[in-house]
Amino acid sequence: MTKLRSSHWFGEQDRDGFIHRSWMKNQGFPAHLFDGRPVIGICNTFSELTPCNAHFRQIAERVKRGVYEAGGFPLEFPVMSLGETNIRPTAMLFRNLASMDVEESIRGNPIDGVVLLCGCDKTTPSLVMGAASCDLPTLVVSGGAMLNGNFQGREIGSGTAVWQMSEDVRAGKMRLADFMEAESCMSRSNGHCMTMGTASTMACMVEALGLGLPQNAAIPAVDSRRYVLAHQAGRRIVEMVHEDLKISQILTREAFENAIRVNAAIGGSSNAVLHLLAMAGRVGVPLTLDDFDRLAHHLPLLVDLMPSGRFLMEDFYYAGGVPAVVRELAEVIHRDALTVNGKTMGENTADAPCWNREVIRERDNPIREHAGIAVLRGNLAPDGAVIKPSAATPRLLQHRGRAVVFESIEDFKSRIDRPDLEIDENSVMVLKGCGPKGYPGMPEVGNLPLPPKLLARGITDLVRISDARMSGTAYGTVVLHVSPESAAGGPLALVQEGDEIELDVNARRIELRIPEAELKRRRAAWSPPPPRATGGYQQLYIEHVLQADRGADLDFLLGCRGADIPRESH
Image (tube, rainbow, N blue to C red):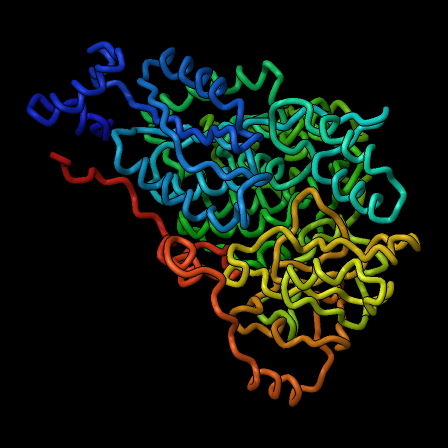
């Protein structure tokens, strides 16, 4: 085995080695911990401002037990925590910043291997992106989902129930007092969203990529087996260091193809597109937007979870979790893809049972025949846009309608409840200014609430188009990630009230039906909006962020920079 990275700090018998060891010993660490054993960094996104991750102190302690048991030296360190529910203007704005925090924290410290503690939506991709840029032995432990919500005798799902009940309040179908009561009924334990939102989706992606131990994705946050898995992860990361099993050996092209296919079968969040593209960009694996459609458009929806179905993550775990889904997808999965436990994906899932065929369907009895993310192109989205067919209204997947245009989210909020808004069930709602540069940060506002006057008539879905994202817990016929975005001069910026827009998901087409000469005239008259932020990280982000079709990473962060030993600090 090659010399451990940490020995360049703790193994030298000179002044610098004295300094590194001596100051560490003020925490009560005995001398034998510096005897050449692997130092395992535990990258913790605990924060009381990130409710999904508020139990991570306990998970970190279980990882430490496993590390010590296997002969390693665990050292916990914090990184920026991105709480989807609190941070403004959007957690996505800071995903790349958090990844930089992770990358430099790993590279600059005496770490031989790292365990990433991930939970809330952006914490998973940001930690994986940062670790991938360093390429050390890496293992992910997800925090787990909350227990099923329960309100007035029925199960409700985080996020999904909010969108449904909010519309009911606006339509006069639900009392505000009941709506307020549901808050505590929805979020009743530690953990992240228990719907197949972005947090649950990315936990499943971690397992499908091979970065987490089997069943990492679905064990509920408060289930004792979550702590057992964390303990086992601590043991395993020490073995990975001895084996020199690096993250680049796990994150191969085949691993990403497995993740894309699993995402289709579980009805995963459209946000996974952005995050997988960004993660692949860091490790140097070629992956494009079109791969999501080509590899998975034909795959069925097998997992009956909200928002595309009926059940929740707790039920998914009891039914068999990700291993059962992978086994069901057997012939389209790269079964020889390596995973962090040293076994292949095929070996991990060969005998995976399914205990509930209502929650996880068989291939010949799917919930929907075609569930993968659909990639749309046309003169409205030359570089692509995405839609999640499993969450859409089937009759709207082929549609023409008159555009009702909102120039910003503020414009939308000021007009959507007005009774004189010219909109009907055939209209197409268009939102601008919500892409990576324009907002900035690409917020989850794409699933625009419908106007009360349509809700009162029982209309629950319209075609909605934007350069924004949509919460993985949301649903509807929503076209997202339109690229190039409006703030970058994409055709979305040129759409005007009353224009006809055609959506044809089967044909993978989205068109602004106006003459080319008129489009050119509008383009010549268009000027970019002033940036929404000046100075600091937000200006850096606006100047360097890539468009959605490339994962919205910062251009200078692409590729793996490794973890060579930095120059001494003294």
